[in-house]
Length: 415
Image (cartoon, rainbow, N blue to C red; front, side, top):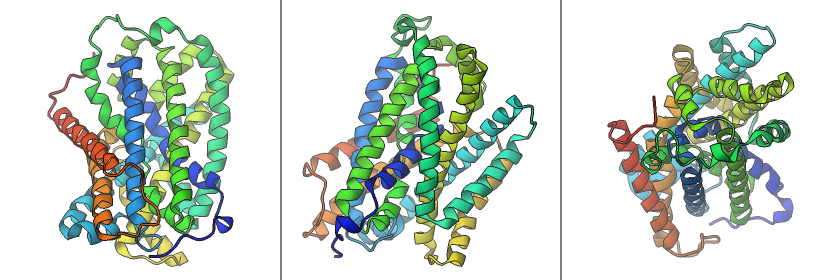
């Protein structure tokens, strides 16, 4: 097994943290207030913390297993070796489905929000055209490599944080505790709607496709990658809390029914928040924030999809090899977005069940199998078998909830 190199020769932890947080903190956050509106703030907050912890553990378990393999090895190589070809086929289909449908979701989201922003400037453009043009730009960054993605993520995330703080200086100023802590609304049932939130919370902490790239980027230094995962997911959790406080503290619970009825797309929620701010400048900042939020997630998810496909098809890292991987990464999601441009919320929801398999259950199984086969691990998740058991239980609950929701058995907060 390769030993990790000296930390003095490694890139800063900041870059990996930005890739993880940039992947997580993005367009998916716009779905959270909408799907959480039934359970509302207190129940949803508790579930968000549980999801963060379990998703962090699952990422660390996959990191543990991946360190036994050459740098750059993704789910395909590791799962096939440790769990066999049958499970690898099932897992591979779920990886491709999740990363592919999330890439489609962010193309859809980017088209909608760019169209909304340009319309405020009296520049009419269709959502399809905006999504197509932005996808080409993202594809260029992905083709240029992980270092370019991390630097662009720094720019986007920096702009996003600045606009976020300015905006929520306004939104948090308008928060009404009666709305935020509402527990006696027109529909008094809250806990019954919590189950529907679970798949969306899981999908909102998806970053596992980026771990292989970070292992390669940090030359298999497990401790350094671990810090990136911890800091990146913690930053996402904090931002999510500020986001749901700002939205739920300003928009009454019952008004989210109308937002959900319109598809729950980003531009609908942005328009609702704009009505709260009553300021053209803050409205413009909200539009800018939304664009950068989409861009961060788009970059992170598509980079993870790129790394997985490169490993799956064994494309080399030459300029032409990366070009082939880039084309394969974007061709189907872009085509789908041109045909169905308004599928953001639906796509995020469908990603939950498949993500349970490859981002929760498979990492736990890989870590368990790796511990049985390799006895000289240079880095391992603490806690013995407890993290593996906890992650498997979380995955089983999420899978059950997702299946029940697809059968329309679980209650839905809607008009």
